[in-house]
Image (cartoon, rainbow, N blue to C red; front, top):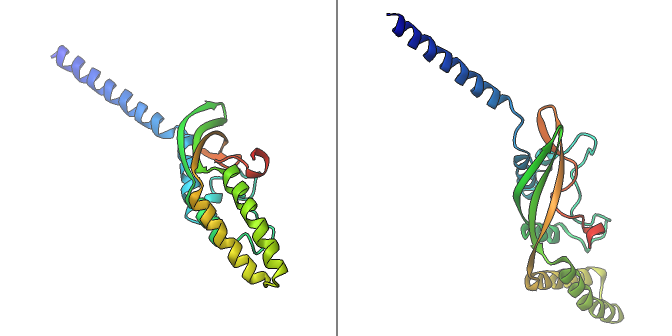
Length: 186
């Protein structure tokens, strides 16, 4: 009888320890890689409100990816086509206290090739169109068409990037975009 009682107590103790481990596992902070994936998924879908929930509170806005200078040349259609070509794959992370770094590989059109070839081909067209008296709207349409043609011929490249995050209210938040900054890196 004593042996049965002892076995039952050991079994109860093991169950209690298992429950504690389950509870502790559920209380752990989420994987920072999921925050990067969720941000990019929402951003790519155009759901900037949802994407902003993955941004650190001191940033206040979703990081810009596309020029927004009020210039008609940079249309939403062009931005959408460019963004569709971007793929972000997480490759691991490191956590240090309340911060983390997620390593990603960003596959996107070769920026130097894309814009280099675009401007190389666009300049003579723009000058010729200006001398022929073409309207701004006609010129913009021609340059947009050229952009799509050049982008279609532009190869994709994969570049490594590190995404810093901080832990806010038990959730990982991005401190910057999960892709290189076009203005500073290229």
